[in-house]
Image (cartoon, helix red, strand yellow):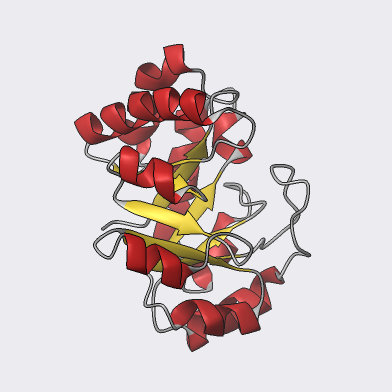
Length: 205
């Protein structure tokens, strides 16, 4: 699984009517995975939107994951479910869906140690910098702690939080396996250009 660049989407940032065009655009530019992150819709609405995203992602060869919702991940036949420390316990997800890939979030080094014990596909670490995409985000960890997380990790680390083309070089230099972004791409006037900038930053490290 190529973890280089995943983009998190919802129906407000990428409307259902624009999913095919938008995902095609960013996939050609270098996005490798897409995560469904619905926070305000009903389960029925999230499922309908997720069907659209999952279908397009598969057509484009992108891996597909669902944030927080194990039920939706199973219903949509996702590749992964992504869980945070306050979500469904990973051991429960493993018991219910042993073959489903697991991505986990960690906001500090203690949580990283916790997450690694479940042998996840990756751990999303951050926020690296302040982020406008999550009102209750934890304090930024910064680059030094991100690099320390990479050193301690027994699984791939994906950085998230406040990442832009202008600062991505320093994030890649920390040794991460990939980046996860929301507003940097979904709110960009030229999302493909932003994606290319994030990928190009890796080649300069």
